[in-house]
Image (tube, rainbow, N blue to C red; front, side):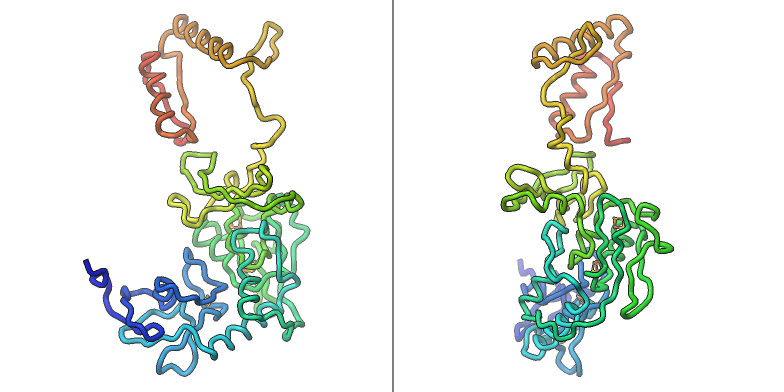
Length: 361
Ligand code: SF4
Ligand code: SF4
Ligand code: FES
């Protein structure tokens, strides 16, 4: 089937006729055709904002380049995504953006998008320092929360953090105050995050393209030696099944990144999935079964002994108090097969329908 049947009209993109769906932006069409248009304030999960102007393209008949992320494609448009003029504009924009920041290179552990600005600076050879001078944003080293670095000396006012908090998290914990060099990302009344509506979901960290917002739990592992490896897996907490990329160095978990293409979460996580990964290597974590002895204390034992003890306990309880004295709660983390076995265990094994799942909590 001709895939062009799914489209409404055509435009000319860098000299080639390409199909377009009504409502698509020039950026979306260009991305589908693998055009490398730089962006800084764009996050595909958010409403386009048009702040950084880095995504400019030339439209035949228009006097000035336009921002492709906020320009809808119209029938017959003729677009150029790459030219010496566009490169010059983008380079100057990048030089101006860079002039705002104290640090241009941050630790990649800061967050998912934290290297975006530095990558573009290199691509456009824009580390010239031409516009160095005044800076906007005042950092909040006094924000003593354990999760989020608020280093606004490295902020470029792209507002991705503010928009992700509002549009994705529905939280509106942070906002924009003042304009120009006085621009500041702030909470209500300029307070600390822990006194705001913040749920510490970490989405603002992960969308920040400069590392102005950083993952303090991951950055605490910056000194762990070794290459960072990423492993795609599913969060170990509730039953939603958010996809994550667990970062490890030499078998130690050093941080968690949300998977932007995760079918259940599309880059979103909660405070537990984002930050509570250190239980994996916690010294108090159980590594072998325990049974309570005559002395009332828990003692390490082998699995056969522990399972025999549990079976005896279940049997005695059911015989003494009846089958409805047993109540099963399956873990929301369990896979389907384990959940199925759990309900068979309770229903078939004890003859009661008292079985539930913690995902319903
Ligand atoms: S951690 Fe989540 S709730 Fe808190 S400011 Fe960032 S996006 Fe908003
Ligand atoms: S803190 Fe980061 S995401 Fe927020 S406006 Fe500044 S640079 Fe953009
Ligand atoms: S990415 Fe389009 S204006 Fe910033």
